[in-house]
Length: 625
Picture 1 (cartoon, rainbow, N blue to C red):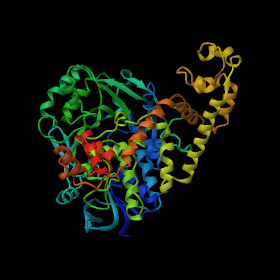
Picture 2 (cartoon, one colour):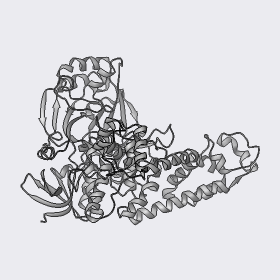
Picture 3 (tube, rainbow, N blue to C red):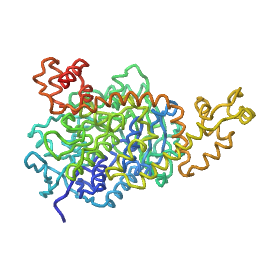
Picture 4 (cartoon, one colour):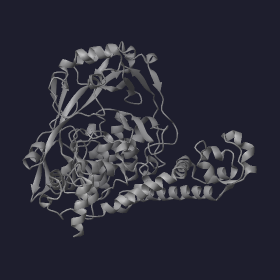
């Protein structure tokens, strides 16, 4: 048994697992401390990964050499690409997962990652030496030394669950809370507060009348989360189902509001606006007679279903009575009620972009402790924190992603620059360069960067290079191949266009909204032959990537020009160059916020809420002097 490590990660949720694997794969001897080795990467709420903008994050994690995409594909029981009716910048992959298989796959990854070890215990205190964290003490009285520590405790820091007026201390149902860490960090001057989230009731499928629900099938095309062609979905695919609440349900829920912790003063912490409880929905949207709910299977063969959209902390009897007034759930039996949970988080403006804390060296935060919500946001932070925990002792420049490189870059910049006043959830609207941050090209954006620091494998890097080569060869072919009228006009009816009056380049035909490369290949044999040159295993993916670049080339180029202009401000470093309190030419609010955040660059300063363009101009003038 060893007691000293390069990196220690506290918590084996989605952030902790990615952080531990990243640090270990980079060469750090890494210890992952978790209270229950049988609950590694537990999907505490929805048994699903991805969704709007979240799916892009998972694709980025995979492109960087992380594990979430691989594990999700192997545990997937339904896959869908959301937002297909919109442009490719909005396409977002989402998968239902087998909850147990997901944990099993993660456990297998962790147990077979070189340099990565586990210890089942609860961390209670940091060892601090000369302003730096140098180890961790546990509830068992064990002290582990470390060169860097990553805190990813999720909802476990002083967690308190609510079911009506019943309160249960814990970080998750039937699991104890963690104590000591928050108290120590508060004494050291860290700013902390409380947040609240919740989860719905779990139902027994044998007691659901699916004939009164609308089926929602998944998709079975080439899409997935991992860019590795060897990773495929192998589990039996299952449908989800749609049902609705009604006015009777709402009446029952309203009667229970006096016993709701959200409305009787029992819960005082900050709740999520974008994933509201059912009681919040009926109060906020009092004019609505129904709300859509989703019945989602928890596994490949289990009878347990998750009722998405019915998150609640109402008393058990109120939840149960309301459910029974939904036609499909007249005879429903439940495994457990929904509940709310309050937990500690830390103001993320106390972090650098590397996710290292400003107050203590070698201490990194990732996940819900930073005020975020969602497995994907947590995993993205965990990956970056794990990389930088390794770099902090091994040497090198911090690994930071910019806002025009990745949704993960947007996420972290928002957290450390703006802070949070509610649980942070990623949306495509938060990314000003979302045309550049599509899910289809995450490998093109990020794999080379990850390979250069040693995280992405050579196999992954070479797969990316070969994909780029085949994609670009196909695009070049469309630019150079002329479609003559004699070739296309006899078959225009098959592809739904008017006869051509003169020949055109194939590229120009692909630009037409009603045409696609696949449709044109059905009538243009040389194009079909060119496509056949592409590796069969990745053919559909590469054709789609080429088509997106062709159809959206103008939009992509315009956004890249804008991003490059902003990048000039990102290159102007200002950290440590100003005593903001003495700059009276800028507003009092600006002085206070700039002093608190201490931004790295002019561009980051411009994104701080309350900092005006005139404040930025004054800083630029002072830099000029």
